[in-house]
Length: 275
Length: 346
Image (cartoon, rainbow over all chains, first blue to last red; front, side, top):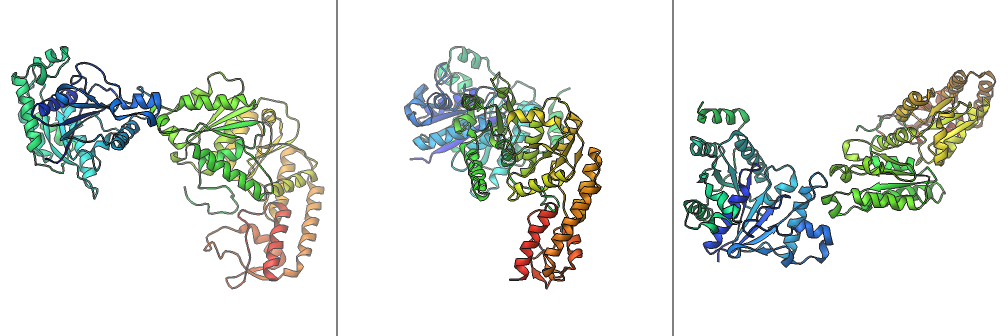
């Protein structure tokens, strides 16, 4: 019996967190682990590829329709590819209410149901930690290991660096177990991108745990409403996610990050940019 | 907000913005106030207003409704709940509905003004009252008074006087009002409207009829300025305090209204003389007034009465109570001296 591992993926919007999360969960499931993936974004598409293209009802949808008293566990947890259990927090319509509070309420409900179980929980979180609600997965009792998903683009690194600030601040709390576990480079096929992200990871007191090259196979798999791990299990791209999964399960290099200032970030980008 | 350093200024520098606004809106008899927030915000204030009423020997049931926000509304937005609460308020057939926001409603960005503006049968007036934005109790009072002043219609000046921004929770609110009415009557001037103390929605519309506004104190100066811009009504900044202050008050009002003050001033001076005679038994006493306040509070309003009665203020003097805010007019001084007498003769 292994201890339950709780990891969270954070990064700039559109950088590929959900694709990475879903493929990571799929790879972990194939390696025999009991995986729960929780999408913590009102966009609710984190688990879609694991669910073969279907948008599962979100926790917040059910709360909105019925109030939280009448909801049961099997209405919010859906089993997808290879037994991966999927939950989508959901949230209010864009522009109203408080999505952050929605995340907090979802977590409270999952706690109440005892749904936070298994070998690995993967939290796929909104790109920007805009308020306390989106930092919820980093709080005590939830994800202890934070992975930053970034490309070599400056704005993506900037977002990753901001998340380092949040982790650093939270890790200063006395009971906090939240640490930075590593940086995942989801490549945009920029020259010297792997070097750049490796250097960024070093500067923020972490390491690059996986470089995932850009591959058309991702889009092909998505058109077939599947993760690459499921659609093309023998492809080199699937192997990358298998490697990431193996790394995540053995990774013990957890650090308090050292975010860098914007000048350092810009000169880093400039150093690696070919002009 | 800093603590109020002065008893001349009776406004509250701390406290809940919502509570401040409710002391105003619930004093419009034929209106209902909707508090857009969790039920507790309404309940707490209902209790406070009700129990304060009981303290004043007055059974009040403030017309307050809550939109009853719960976690679900916080997450998905509370505008629908607000719409329902307004609907419920309107169904009780009030002449106006005031909608007061709360901290959480403003935090999640509910558009209270838009909901209020969606075609109701009676005026539905939003008043911003989220306390976390830094406002105090007094800010709530002022927000309510200035917003409601905006309902007033232009009207012909008929020579009356408005009393602006009375402290509806003040223990002596009625006595203070009665004293100002008495002083005005010496000048032959009637009151037009108590803005806002136990009035109707229709009466609000006539706030512009007065030729002069008398403000309760400097805390509501903004309301006086607003009414001056809107209706052209000049204002006197505060109720009178002290012997000389009361005489000066008569002069200022006479001046502003273009009437003679001489007879009124002589009559009031005679009243003050006779009052001082009534307290000749405590003349020459030695008192200590600031034992609870570490000497930091302003009490210049007792200087002239002390001088007239040869009362000295010394740390070793008899401890006498000072009212929470400066006593209003000659009658206010009389009540204060009564309390002093009890302490001195105790």
